[in-house]
Length: 90
Image (tube, rainbow, N blue to C red; front, side, top):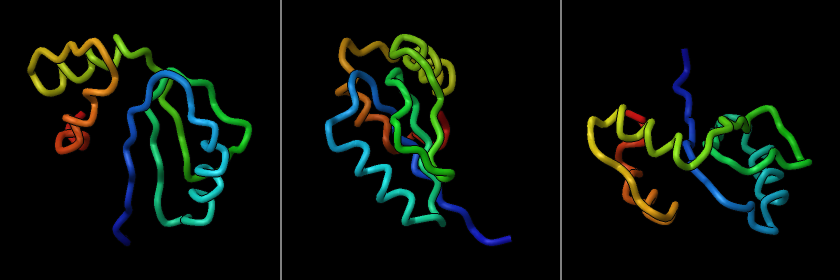
């Protein structure tokens, strides 16, 4: 079985105006799967290698706290960048 690549991206708030183009670029990389944890709606541009877990920011903070056995309660999604090394565990 070949190795698979998955890019896990927690993103909360509002998609940037260029997001539809980003999804189009994902379409042209079929060997990579993108998984978004988000409270944003799904974009119009859909492709098979991009999926979404619809979750609120508060629910995501609880998920992080449970999975990592820590207290994770930032006031802003900006602090999600601190979790990048642990995304595989989350």
